[in-house]
Amino acid sequence: MKRINEYKKLFEIENDLILADLKTKYRNLVKTWHPDKFQDSDEKASEAEAMSRRIIDGYHFLVSIAPETREATLEEYTQTISEAGIYDYKHKGIMLEITFNDGSVYEYFGVPKNVFIKFNNSDKQVRFGKRNIFFSYVYRKAKSAEVEAAA
Image 1 (cartoon, helix red, strand yellow):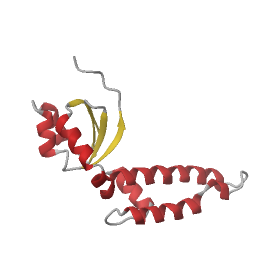
Image 2 (cartoon, one colour; image 1 turned 60 degrees about the horizontal axis):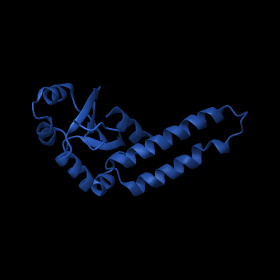
Image 3 (cartoon, one colour; image 1 turned 90 degrees about the horizontal axis):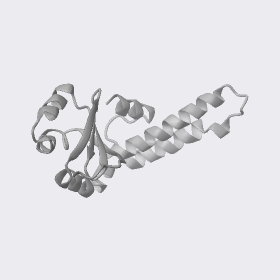
């Protein structure tokens, strides 16, 4: 949640995340902080370089959790959580990363430790996830991983 709030603050998004508004704000920020606007000798050149990376990272992150993106990928997501079992998972702070057997990796934000403990101790993690995690927390597809075939 900290990462989400940090990026929303950077893009001055207070309420709902709308892709059209995000894109406009992204373009304006890139115009302001593009490293080519500064001379190499200018003290703001290195700050602009770092800021432009942060803007690009933030934009891609916010696009990945936007409602429009989630709606567009809902069919794939539903198929993954319904048909692919859980291969691996990690809890980092309040972010739960789950790798499914099909190689999809999803990050769930704001998952508290007590929910993770219940998930970890559940004898049917997929069922627990469907009921308590998969649609209850902000999520995004992080990447695809190489998953060894289950014997």
